[in-house]
Length: 88
Image 1 (cartoon, rainbow, N blue to C red):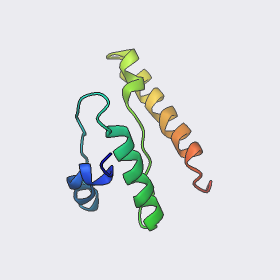
Image 2 (tube, helix red, strand yellow):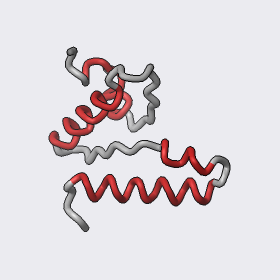
Image 3 (cartoon, rainbow, N blue to C red):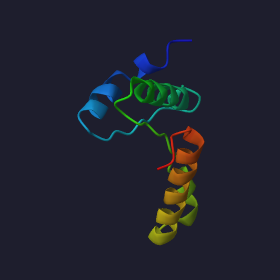
């Protein structure tokens, strides 16, 4: 298996530029592994608190934007709680 982070070389550059990015690739190609590893590396470096959250949960509510927002905020809260970050 190839190291995960070098498979997404532009990601770090975009993050350093405070830019967003979307990662598209077929199933089972290592997207989640690469992003989790990158998030862990960024957080370990100390300058960034990286949190990985999937927006897939909001797909279930279609065009109900209020429900989608609520689901995404809950997903963010849950991910932050699981991250081990100190609570402030």
